[in-house]
Length: 110
Length: 113
Image (cartoon, rainbow over all chains, first blue to last red; front, side, top):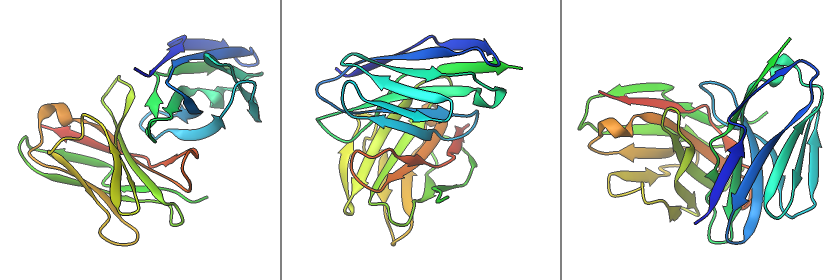
């Protein structure tokens, strides 16, 4: 059964303090790994898709990387506006649905 | 930037009643989805829709649920005979192509009392 586990559940950083969020997955044939940002009471906002091990993508202070078992979302010099819950999801080769992890709640203090 | 629009933003209904949640996907998108998120839990898949038919559905999506694309712009989720445990945030999403990142709407918070 496909599974996605994110760690830590919550992360508190000072502004400018870089860190990484982890997403470990078990899937029968990975078609894609997706990172989303979710603000309270809102829908997930698409950040990145990674399709194969070794792939990396960047957007502003965020960089996502992928191996055969996990993905990392690196946050460089975060700002308070980066505070949100970051969700990881995978899609397997059996269909189109996304399987989400429980998320990492990031809080960045000024 | 194009958006997925969901209405209403909040719906309160009595147990046993039927509700229809409405979504307007992005106009050039071809793949449509419904997900839900019970408070404090993971986002979970309900159903995907392509070419005017259901392409995949989860175990949650039983006979109580149905989806429809009544015209060229709307995509609806109907929940019949609502139960307390149907209370959740329901998200509509769409994507331009298969295996692209979805665009999610802001959700409808359904409260069953």
